Length: 285
Image 1: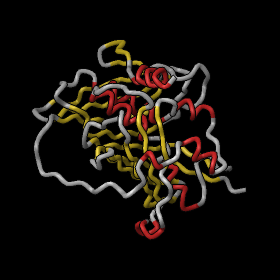
Image 2 (image 1 turned 90 degrees about the horizontal axis):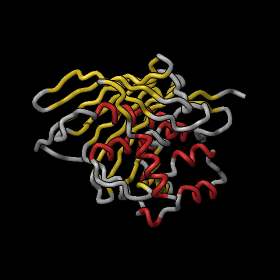
Image 3 (image 1 turned 120 degrees about the vertical axis):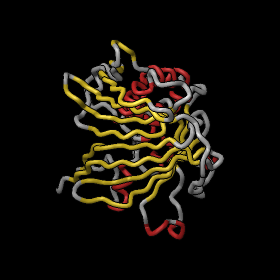
Image 4 (image 1 turned 180 degrees about the horizontal axis):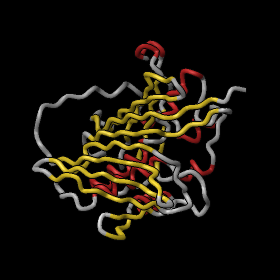
């Protein structure tokens, strides 16, 4: 079953070229409903990477969510090849449904170069073998994920880390950490590893901005949606092994929340940085 879930995810994120610069991403569900933002970002990145020289990999993407997509319909991606230089290539992507844009994305690709290097160290957290699986952690907290979210995450193993002691939390900044990896090996395709990481990076990030208020994304009266999403890829992510997603939220206000994420390989290598702003509305009872 795990192998089938991973194969299904790779199939979902492998876009089909239907004309020059035009790609189609498959529908994720036979039923209508809001499409997962990480899916649209990941499919758009997959479309942007088509035709890029194989020695260049995505190092950053910036996306704006414009409209809610329909999970029951395919998405069309139009790719604009803006620039191919000696070191960088840049692509713009417009994701469309029903003739209307639902997402704009720009991605930049860079050939490998040597240079100065430093990175913030990985937080001190328990190793994944010491952390509960996601379903058990939710059950212990008296929570349960909706069925559509369980399907969305079927291709991953997720293990939330216990909350850090207050003495180790910097400036009372709301933080959460969780380990994740593919539920079965998917191989070492550098493009698809980035695409899958883009898919996973949208899960739970913006809900970090609800933590200081004692709420979660599925708390009564809470409604939210991603507004924009940015990823910087520092390394090819070893997605088949455990990755640590360390998330925090330095600010929320004006019905918006801002969250940041750092994704580390198990050996402590920082492989990606993420930032997102989302709409967070709370209905006053």
